[in-house]
Image 1: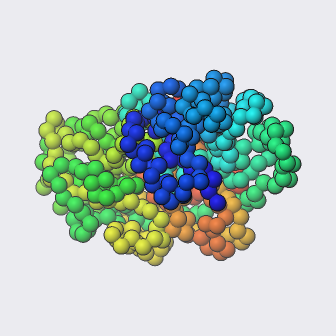
Image 2 (image 1 turned 180 degrees about the horizontal axis):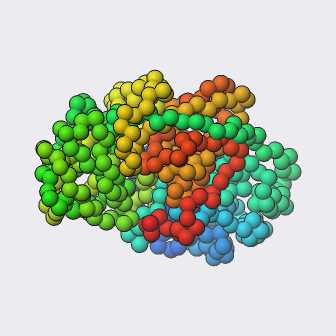
Image 3 (image 1 turned 180 degrees about the vertical axis):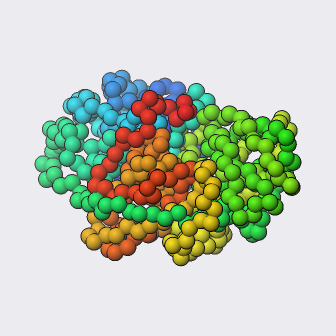
Length: 490
């Protein structure tokens, strides 16, 4: 039975629309009835509460604030936005830890300090919701992002959402933070706490040998593939009904003696650029020429080629996670501006969505996924004809994880660059150990099966030289350069 329902979360941080909030209330009442307590949550400032709450006593106004803040001034402010006598002090997001972005050190907060601030709330009959009580995982492409000063100050989240929470991503509780918070909660609960469960059992299955099978360009043929959309100018992913994954943009241009200077003013979020002579080297992979990122936005000097026809440019854009807080929350993906070559816009583009949802799902509207999965399963022994291309090229690597007893495990990607991994068709998430800090991806037992488990890796740049990943029994957040503190500094 539902007792409370939250209609919005921190809306006052980026919006100010009472009609919208009242509309949500009408929807919630229609589904939940009049006996359920509805509430909003906003950061503990007067401005946020003014914009994000509904006056009166029909919707309860709760607050959140940093764990290191004195809670009671925030609760005093909260009272002003509730009816008299109807403002029990409630922190709906008591932060037990914090999230981590790619390129940062893994978040770590002191267990004793965290517990002491929880006690400041509970000791005076306040209430708190632990966020997070249990860490999680951003499987697939469901990781989010934040920004700083502007939308180019872009900071995507790790695949792990462990959050330094008292219950870890894998369910482990044998840690100081869990113990410290449990001691505080035990002091202020009316009934004894249940016994402490044991950590989840994990297993290391050893090395998984992989073989390079096909490049992404071997699978995706933009000349003949039916799913291509054509437009004079590049279109955002959303314009092609794509929410996640990748988009491939293709255009032709006249070869120049000096190669030309490529500039993309606005790309969300990371674009790898390749060129080819399509009529001269049909079996060759396009040549990698550089990467353009949202946070750096540099120009790329295209090399001179000896094409007998037009050059072809391929721009593979990765959606690295939508901004989910603040004024830049409306975060379209793909190429969002003209693409300039020597100051003039390139036109006549072909665009191919490559969402890469779980590979075992029926992709009726995008056969590139289902066709690729069938092709890859049958091509474990196939090697690329083109072994001469040592430039970074997106390519698939396939192997088998043999499981004798199904347990949780982790995949270590040390020595790999950046990409996505699938186990038995399930999109486990992104890896980026070359930038860090996350080295290992969590693999819950239900994804696995006894016997052989198919591992498919899309590596966007360069693989581990020995072509293996390792199944290990622990997380690891020590990859990348310790000098990196922000993604946009690379």
